[in-house]
Amino acid sequence: MILVNTDYIDGKELNVLSVVKGSIVWSKHIGKDILSGFKTLVGGEIEGYTEMMNEARAIATKRMVNEAEELGADAVVNIRYATSNIMQGAAEVIVYGTAVKYVNK
Image 1 (cartoon, rainbow, N blue to C red):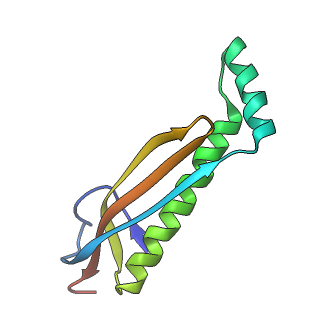
Image 2: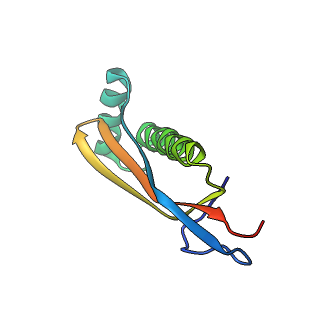
C-alpha cells in the first residue's frame, strides 16, 4: 500500500474510492506521566510523550490502511494527521486520506 501526502502518484491515473481514516486515543502509564512531569522542570525532550505519539500515529495509520484495504485500494493519497489533547497524558491521533485504485497498473 502506497501512502503519500500529495494528491497524486507520479505515472499513475487514479480512481477515487472513498475517504478513509484511522484514530486512537492513547495514554502512557501514570508512573511515566509523573516522571515526564518532572522533566518539564528542567526542559528538554519528553521522550515518554514522543514515544507515546509515535506509537499512536503508527496504530492510527494501520487502522486507516486496513480500511483502505477493505475497499480494495492500491494507495491512500492526500494523507493528513491531526492530534488533540484529551487530558493530561492522553492524546487523540487521527489520520485520514483518500483511498484510490490505479486505473492502469
